[in-house]
Image (cartoon, rainbow, N blue to C red; front, side, top):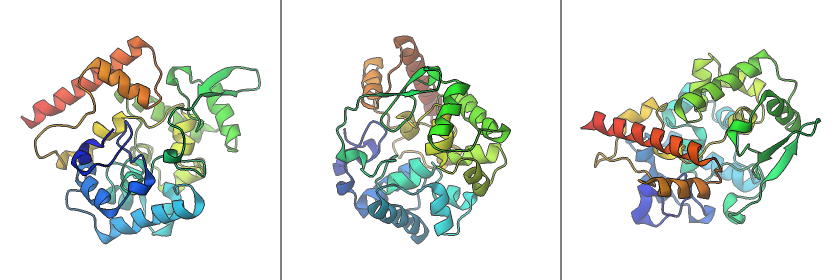
Amino acid sequence: MGIPDLADEGYEGDAGGFLLDLSEWDTKFAEALAPSLGIPGGLTSEHWYVINFIRESFAVNGERPTIYETCRAHCLCLADMKRLFPTGYLRGACRLAGLKYSEKPAHSSWLPRSRPARTSKVPWEKTYQVDMRGFLIYPSEWDEDYAASKAIEIKMPRLNDDHWKIINFIRKRYKETGVVPTVYETCEANQLEIEDLEALFPDGYHRGAVKISGLRVTWDMKDFDLAESNLADSEPEDGDFNVPFTTLEQFKEVMKENGEEVSDIEMEKRFKNFMERIEGKDSEQS
C-alpha cells in the first residue's frame, strides 16, 4: 500500500501510513512527509537532530528510543517536542525517521506480516488476546486485572493512584474520540512534565502507559486526529483529507491489515464515527 501523502514517490506504507521497509527511507521521504504532519515550513536542523538521533539509536540498539531518551539527549522539554513534532512523538518524529513501534531487536519490515496472537495470563487463569508486541487486540476485554498483570509483566512497581489517573484518562479520551491521546495531550491534561511521566511509566508512553491501558496506536492516528489541534494550520492544498478508504468494506480491509479484530457492530460504529468527523472537518473548510 502506498503512503497517501507520498503516493507519487513510490514509498510503501502500512495501513497507518508508516514506512514498511526501513531500507527505503531517505531524507526526501522525511522532507516530503513533513507538511502533512503539521510542519508546513519544512524540516530545520532542530528536526534533523531528533530524526537522526532516533535512526542512529535504532541502528545501534535495534529499538527506537523512547521520548524520554530523545528529550534527554537533546535537552528538550515536552513543549519543545510538541513545537517540533505537533502530531506526536511516534506519529510525528518516529514516522519521519521511517520507524514504527518496535520493542524487539527487529524492525517490523523484517518480519512476516501475518503474526498469530499469543495469550497473556493473569494468576487466576483469565486470558486476554494480545498481539506479538504484547498489546491487547480487543480493547473491550480490558479490565483492571489486565492492567495490573501487564504492569507486572513489564516489571513496573505496583500501580498506584497516579498510575490509574493516567490510565483512566487515556481510556476515557479513547472512548470519547476513538483515538489514543498523544503524549502531549496526556501530560498537559494531567499537568505532568515529561520527567513525571517517565517516573510513572519508565518503559515509555506507548510501551508503558498505552499498553497497560489496553490500547494501541492504529490506522486512524495517521489521517484524522481530532485531538491534534496543531494540525489546523496544515491543511492539504486541495482541501481534501487523505483517508485510505471511502466505504465500509474498504475500512474493514484497512482494519484487517492493521491487525484489528472487532465485531461487525463495532466496525460499523467506528466507520460511521470516523466518516462523520471527516465530513465535519470538510464542511469547516468549505
